[in-house]
Length: 276
Image (cartoon, rainbow, N blue to C red; front, side, top):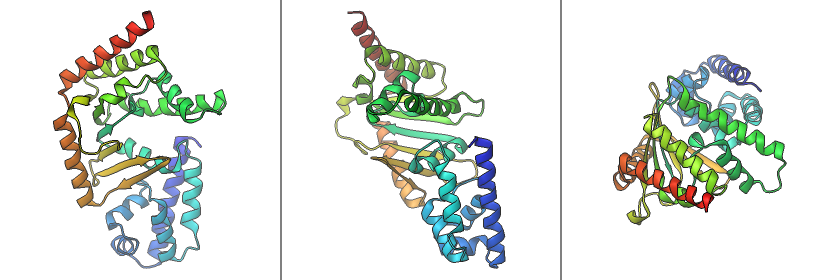
């Protein structure tokens, strides 16, 4: 499904939610209280600004007595997303964010990946896949990277563990090109990257990928990811605690200037490997 058609489908979801909520004589705040989200979130679902998670759609069905309508529609829309179900909602929010702060412990994040690096990552996770399937995944990943090329791109701040610089994904030539790409984005001031060096030792959030997403007219959200699973957190107290953890990571990391020097040095090391 094309992105425009998908958005229209979510707008239908929101219009139906509003119609059935009003038929039940419930305000947004009243429905929100019964399904454990804020009334503002119900309003954003109705305007297709945000998409509910599955458990919220199920509770809406229960409260509005819609016989599974919203659950079925949600599953249909998510199934037609080019992303895994656990990741699709996070990508939708990513497109709306005005600020993205990310911590990546072992892999260059998707928004900064080159096609060659992305291909190597997908091949490692799908060793029996066809070339066509891998190329589809790479194309979807590259579509995401366009977010940072838009004039209205979000502020993107990355804390990247040095581990991600040292794992030779795709081999030395691919890594040299990938690190050059990140360095170029840094020099153009499209992104801010800080490297958390091995020398920092133990640190908060060890081994756990996370994004913090900030919005102009909505509360911040955090996305964390595990093995073929993901979790969106928007409970204010928890988001505040995670933000404090991210601030600790930034404080422990190298400055952007020192990080750029380390990235360029690592890229040169990989280039020497290709020429030896």
